[in-house]
Image (cartoon, rainbow, N blue to C red; front, top):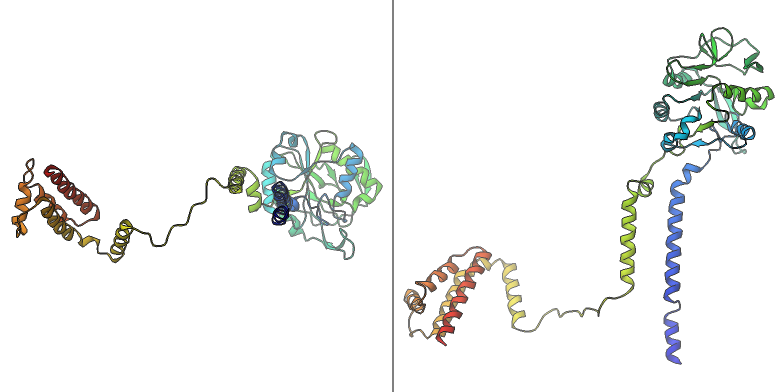
Length: 404
């Protein structure tokens, strides 16, 4: 009874419980990693000239207006994958430019949308977030023409007109709407929407199906508060869209879906295969460590017993001292004395006289011992000395066997 209680106290959880606990922890960690990696791409900006913004310069009202009209929300383009899809070429892409947009992203988008219907909406107002109201903004002043012209120049060879608008109403597809404050326009002899002779609010490029709306107050949240302007916004889009209701909004200019970091590289092709390989290898290593294969290896002695251990230790000391190179002549002299003792050489023979007597013991080879003795005595490298010593040892063992 006491043994059972002791075992239960030592293992409060079963192996199955521990396994599922570890698995759930790893799954939660993986989910947290993925959500942390992609959360910035799906976080909707609170303000600014984006399709998610509910401020005056935003376009959330137009998105909702299209949703109510067409029965479904217009899709959002978040990156190159969305642009490359076959469905994207059939949509009118609405590109809303804000003062803080990415110019490089606009250049890439213009190149990618070549030959496809695209509406570019220029920025107009400088705003500031309204404290205490998330997503609201305060209009400060109109952007300088030089700032707007920088964006316009990336799309077409044109500049904003300097003259002020004197019209109180603008004709959009037969519908008269109030003219916004400080109207922005460009010179164009054949405008799609005009603000007088030679002044275009909506213009089309000659060599591309690109449309430029110079004044965003006709479709942004501030402009849609007027009933006539809201209706005219749909008429304007209907003039240029390839199919009714086929409208898509761009988000890449506002930094959504275009931020790459190390975490994304790990979970997206082509490096996804490497990440999966590392995870599989780690899982196999973990499973391998759950159980022991074979008995545990006994720890060896620090100082071994026996003659072999003594020889190995001596060899190690000689190697560390750097004295192995000078052992060839000493080993040769030792083997000469050993061979003489084993073969029964006459007492008193030394040096060359002993070598000649040992050579005479070999009936199959002349100067057999002397040649091997000299090879060991003259060896310099460890490999050559080892080979010569083996031959000398074999000669002695063979002569001793013949004598017996």
